[in-house]
Image (cartoon, rainbow, N blue to C red; front, side):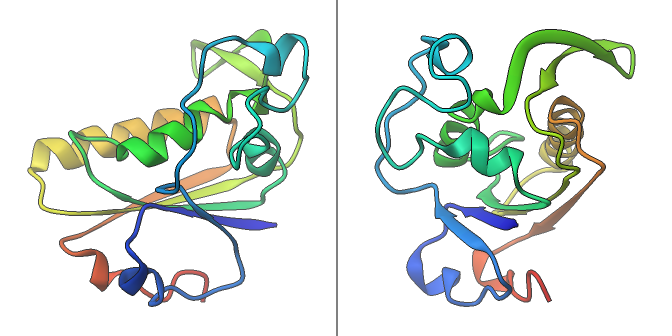
Length: 162
């Protein structure tokens, strides 16, 4: 399964191609409440019953994850960040070491690839921060590979998944 998580307005979204399960992160959804029921009571899915309830399973079962986000201070936009916050059920509440640091064990065994497309005006420092952020996220999710791209305008993004 391939997923595309985006925060794009409708005209820009039409330029994308490929066979993806599409998640519009900009739609209305609750933020993570930090209750940890996705780890302790409702193993694998969020206790908040809305469109992001199964975000952990979606991430965990995906072979390719493509994120299209406005670059905000060297990271994801608020809607994209909310999606990933709600997907902590992708991991287990146990720890392991990867690359010399402590991380949570993955709940799912699917090997994944992460591709991130940032759009918007940014400095060289913000780009470097974004690259480091995505690299650490890839390690945290125990992904096989990751790549990061930058464009000035969202309209320039196209051909994803070809």
